[in-house]
Image 1 (cartoon, rainbow, N blue to C red):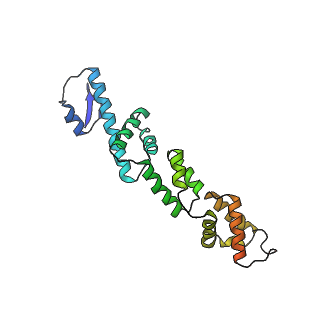
Image 2: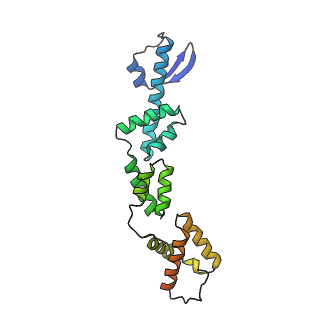
Image 3: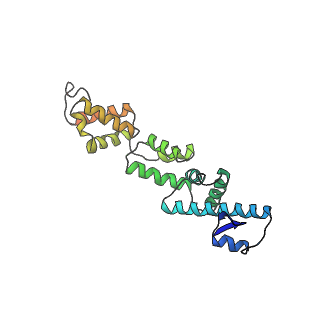
Length: 199
């Protein structure tokens, strides 16, 4: 519903809020009453926006707050997120675990890269680190698996090797571990020490 003051558009509100406040068309209200109503309307709008965002995908509390702050003041966004948390619609730890599993299984990110990505979503450092390093797989074994599935071309020539290394580094794996994994894989293929010395 659109609210006009003296014939000029002022704001839009949900029908539920309009009728809950008990206003009638043409009613005269003082400035303080209207400011209070406008504040409720903004909160109601942001709350509806938050529910819409959460219906599309899960969010961390910080991520949701940042998105809501694009539409209204940061303080109001914080209030809305606080209500969302109180209703149990957001759980940062559960979000962190689900998102970390997606990054680990689908994108093959390293534990360090996962921790960084969780931090970018606004997850507290201790939680991000705990969740990221909860995966038990050895990272060298993870790299070996990636080499076998995606980077066997690294043995073609030095340029290919460097390209594979950069790709693994982008996934968050340190150079030392990458080099170690390539050495192990090379030995498993039966290369002698003077063969493929760029690896």
